[in-house]
Length: 115
Image (cartoon, rainbow, N blue to C red; front, side, top):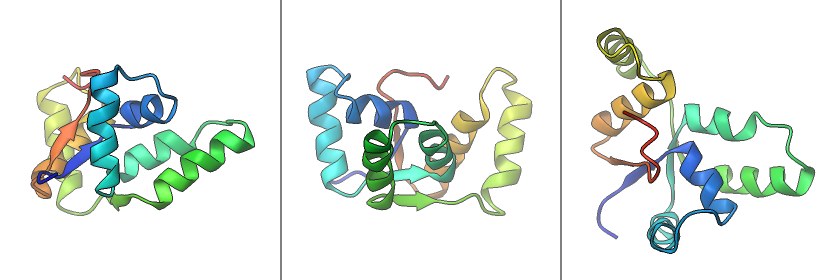
């Protein structure tokens, strides 16, 4: 596909639940086929729910097939600065913003949850 994308947790959940519009499903399918990239925050957000076992297994399998970008000493202070400058940004959105810049990726957030 060329470009690498850091996929937002809401997009992952909607993709796995087949709730994205057809164009979004097609696009994410291509991204996922190319090995999905997620932040450790998305990993936590996705696996924190008490989903039924069969749903949890699907989510865990997706996580296992993904490249997970951790929080590190480069991302943490820059995320803090973003949060201080943009008081209305959520921590997951700020982390995604920093991860994408640190790793030269695009954040794919079909629903535009992040401001």
